[in-house]
Length: 536
Image (cartoon, rainbow, N blue to C red):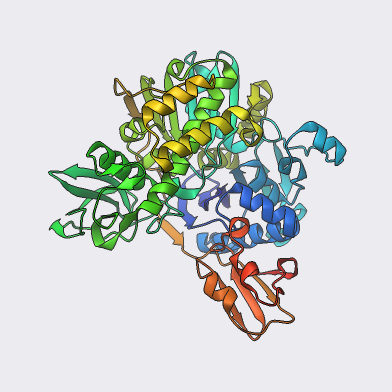
């Protein structure tokens, strides 16, 4: 038997594993720091594909996958089988199938635009059918969606949580950039995606990072100082330094160095700082409005605002699903947390600041369910068809948050709470006034079941490899360029280089649709993204 590759095509980055097809043993794990598509969330990725070409988006995803394959190092360079999992947009772009049906909300609009829904059932296809993978000569296993807009990642979350086997009213949330969530009430499952943004995965935070070795993943106050906890080379949490949060002075030296902070560390810091009166929304109550962590890592009020928007989006999503189901937030009994953030996060701290419905009696942390399912269907065709049957049997209702009035109202109130300092009592009052499920303070801490210690429990005998650069670029020659370099100067992430009228954009650093400062900065108005070509 040969080598197989299981890959989670995540919005904030890809996670892949090399697997021995003979015994199912994981050999090596590779993660990327960001997604190869320009942008910070799935809507940015969708916008890039729809505006500048789905073929460009497909080529970027496939090129990134090839770089990952090289890093995984399959035996003799040969691959027997690939299994993918992720949200419908990422899977569709990988396969090279149209995403128009995912880009527009409302059946009437789709009919007017003559947009056909794509079939997203379970399938096993030859790699030759996917542009860019023709030379691999292997099979590609594709998991099913529940509906065209409720993808394999949501199915993985629902199945691996175990919520289908319980009568409890329960909610499962993937605490990532898209914040996919599912609420089970009786035999009906309500799904949605809050598009919380990348702050929960450490991105868009000044010193932030996705979960990787040598980043802060948890914080505790200790006699007025901050105790840092850092991920080591094996992604285990170890005790770091104790520091003075006002200036960063080391009170007690730790044994591990930190280079940044994860989204879970951000959540822990916010909870601890709010509990100790150091954060009074929307302000940090220090002389320079900064909280200092170990090794020069800092947390600013801008970071607080970014995190608040993400936390608010998730709680607004929970309120919206409860509203759709006709229940109160108090009725939710069990919560499941998935994804890297959902694994490393201190569940009790997340619960206190509102990322979990306030009255749950139990919280289960379940790891990266998307990668787990990718490995399962890599090794077993029977599991693939079993998932197809489960998907068809699920009685589901998808709530499109982008057009749902309840989400709009709840999220506006959350922004007022997190970014403008509206009191929590007022937040409760206005939710009730608008007829939405309301909130309350946590009265009893829930039981926490941590099913996994790491979001990827088994990294393999060859360990974890981190691709700091995905290796994908967009390039073009710009007619009329005067070499002023203003496009380079305004790029917030140093993603763009220009020399001799040739522009090169490192796509995994580019913020895409919600930035485009380079386009607006060009004094000659000649930086036309339609002319970009995929390189590398």
